[in-house]
Image 1 (cartoon, rainbow, N blue to C red):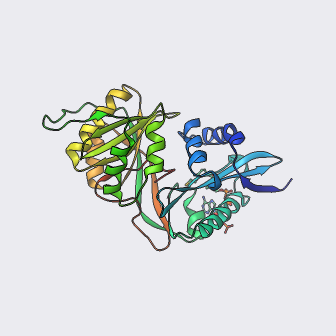
Image 2: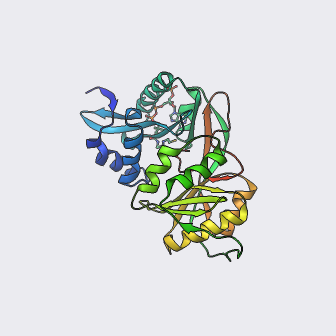
Image 3: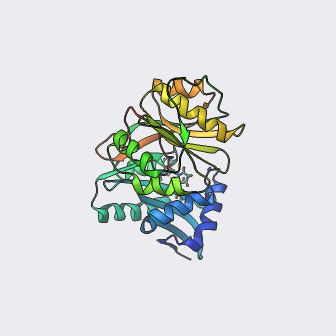
Length: 277
Ligand SMILES: CC(C)(COP(=O)(O)OP(=O)(O)OC[C@H]1O[C@@H](n2cnc3c(N)ncnc32)[C@H](O)[C@@H]1OP(=O)(O)O)[C@@H](O)C(=O)NCCC(=O)NCCS
């Protein structure tokens, strides 16, 4: 039967999670649910004989910025043009959205597909993993857990110059998500993953604040391994090596041409994840 691309529906969630699990990704059901809740019209399924064998998403990160995510084809069916067919549908939705600020974080397998479709490299981004090591917390500033999405959204707006309010409100309200805030200075989110607990976004005014927030997150993570996605800079390498983490995967941040520094800036120390930039 022909390969058909249509909307990914709530009933497809288990199949989508099975695909990302088979690919060795870190998503849990809540990660797919979040994408479906916040950008339902951007979630695509590729079906063969009625079975979900491919996915792709276009999510709304801020009113101006869209992110391409979850581009995945069942390993047994790769190299047949399915990935490209999914991506054509994603680009159709980009056109309909009227926005030109479109980014993604590309694996080495995805990058050739995106290069052919008008995306260009912006900068390297790495996934770091490991067990967080305790660091001596500074005495003159503090950080605490909160359920206030408004504090987080305000800090975030200042750092990234766009409004990620809907995403942050969804995350902070999720029962499994832990939110650490250093008032006026930064915040970090932590949530469970299939393989590792995941940290992100991490927004911090400076290194001291970033260390303090990671130290608070360590209390939530305990001895579990964590993952965190950070642009490849000397500052991030120093921060994350000191925290006890090592680079597990190397990806490339790309944007629809021209190259634009979307969701990048000195205070953005970690992405939400590769799904949301
Ligand atoms: C990336 C992925 C979705 C591509 O799906 P696919 O169905 O195998 O891709 P297609 O067969 O449609 O290939 C699309 C184009 O990219 C090219 N291409 C695909 N993989 C390539 C590779 N590894 N190197 C060079 N070119 C490649 C193909 O030749 C094709 O070009 P063409 O249209 O000019 O013939 C698939 O490899 C996958 O699921 N990988 C694991 C998950 C992943 O890394 N996703 C990307 C996350 S950013």
